[in-house]
Image (cartoon, rainbow, N blue to C red; front, side):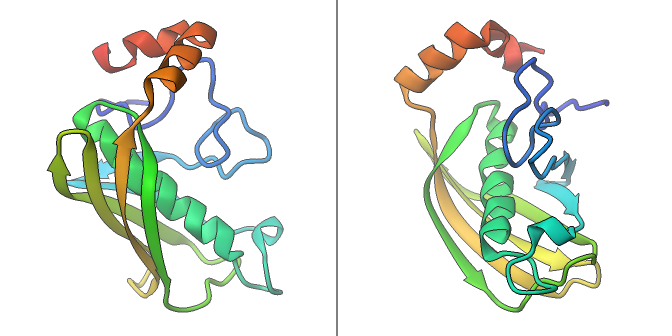
Length: 157
């Protein structure tokens, strides 16, 4: 996969619930850049249901959280969620293709503010979100590098 912005994990880890290609139980999101937005397509499957025929709200939150935090790739750094606010606007049907997007709307040293939405193909908004995303704490970085040394070179590719 050609991924010049390093939006998708190409390390040996790949176990993230949202985006890990090696996580058989995960959502396996694949990101791409569209202008200044980070975008992923997703079609909810029956195993993602909450109420019958509807996508579980926690999966909606995961899609938005992962996409908004992925905007850190535009700054070439991994970010974690400091705060996330979601407004659920309408039920998300199982089996219908959706697109989730996120964009940076503000930056300051040590934080990114991002906004985005989960939408049906016709642009109908299922949920929108905004949040603040922070660099990984030093301890988490150290632990990750000890287990997966290739992360040290990730942004140098």
